[in-house]
Image 1 (tube, rainbow, N blue to C red):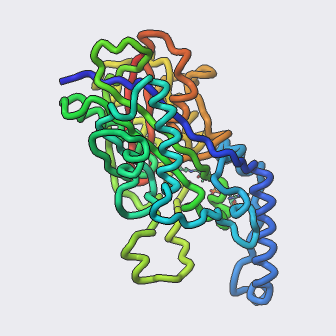
Image 2 (cartoon, rainbow, N blue to C red):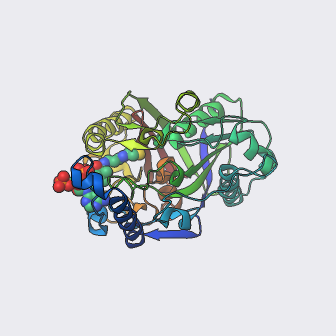
Length: 372
Ligand code: COA
């Protein structure tokens, strides 16, 4: 069995930002337009008028202040409310491959590794731009990486599940190096016209480079242990799939985009995640006092505050459980990796931390690391 290390991470951040105020102004214009178009039915009482959204609600309910997106104009157009991402021809790089490559190159350069020395590329994300060929194989080619590549989807837990998959192959000796890449174009599966969730997501791509830990003479994090778990739930669901499309071709169906029962998710996922982390730490003989940092999935600030307190047995000190969701919103599987990438360089040799992502499935994955 070989030891495994994380030697580099990379984050691609889109250049366009939408603040809560901009988002709410667009949503409220859309709601006004819709109400005017449906005035007769609203007056007759057969449909309900749409109510306005508010920035104050968004910050109070989620902690989100803004989000990055690939296309701002399409999302904020009240007559559209959806990003404009032009279809790319088969000989152009896909969107996910393009942003995934950017993040991967940053991770490779942080680690001083040549793409040709990578044996495995995993594209792990909540949605894939196409069914096949795998996005990961396209990224492998664009990077000139070696070995093999495949896609995997475990929704918001895709990054940690990808890390465990790659780490297991490095441990067993079948590969030496792997890139786990999370290109999350959440703006394309969010229903921007739904007041209950229109503020939730943003776009980003992250990459994590894992290597066999054999006399590494560069900064790295030892991967001490990984653990994944799943339990079926319909409370976060997106029915968009090739069978559904065949049957209901042109319908504008709400269930073909991200749907959630946010309150239930909140209530059910908190105990699941807290217990998962407690079991993982107990199994590895790691006490709360041994943990210097928590890099949690970035969906909701109250949720993270609760989990941080439960895991550490006290309110986390500033910096112990860094949040990035105020700037990025929920970026699905990429969130905990953005937090890890941006808030880990200051850790000292011997300091331990825990990366944890959770979401649809339900699914939860945790990775315990130690600064070398
Ligand atoms: N603007 C203003 N008010 C809004 C609003 C908006 N955009 N959206 C909802 N409201 C109102 C509701 O109408 C409701 O009003 P009422 O009490 O008068 O009926 C009130 O705010 C509470 O709505 P609710 O949907 O229950 O909000 P919440 O406090 O549960 O927060 C979430 C919603 C989604 C932020 C929260 O449930 C959450 O984060 N859940 C977990 C999500 C998660 O982790 N998902 C994983 C995805 S990967």
